[in-house]
Length: 207
Image (cartoon, rainbow, N blue to C red; front, top):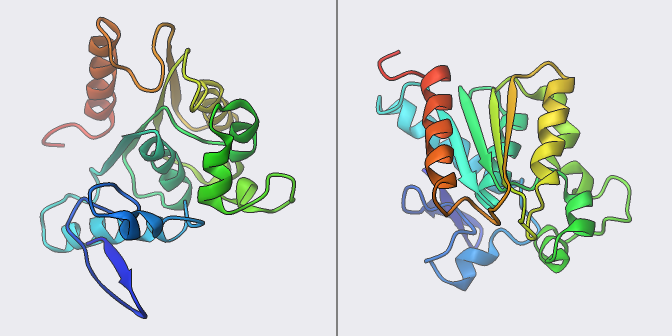
């Protein structure tokens, strides 16, 4: 299961609540500072390994979805591990370099990556999913709101086009009246339908 660091040792954290998530206090949230796409990656994969080992999860039918930071992780994890049957990144960051110069919160990535976009090879580049698109084998449905100023829709488009360039199945849905996430009707109905259809196609129930 996910772990959190305590001094020089590690101990289990509550399932489904990986490092950096809210609801566990500032110290727990700070564990992700400078480490987005680093140790948090192992937290997710180790959680899946544990569930598979207990016979709870079918390793051939594991999907990914999440929004904002979760959208980033959904895009990032498919570049780091090919186990995923399908993914739906929502309002993702896929290119930290362009994100820094197009988002209304550039201070966020500078803080959480602890990096500098002007430095070649920095985490702004090495932790960007688009830079690793050639490793992806997972079909991805990329979702964004056209009015999103936090993670502009160009982030989802960049990843979509990078995946297509490498022969990976990808679809892109940009909702014209939505911002950071899909929240209003009828867009929400369309989004939920697309998400369910995507997972049903690539990891059908009982498959």
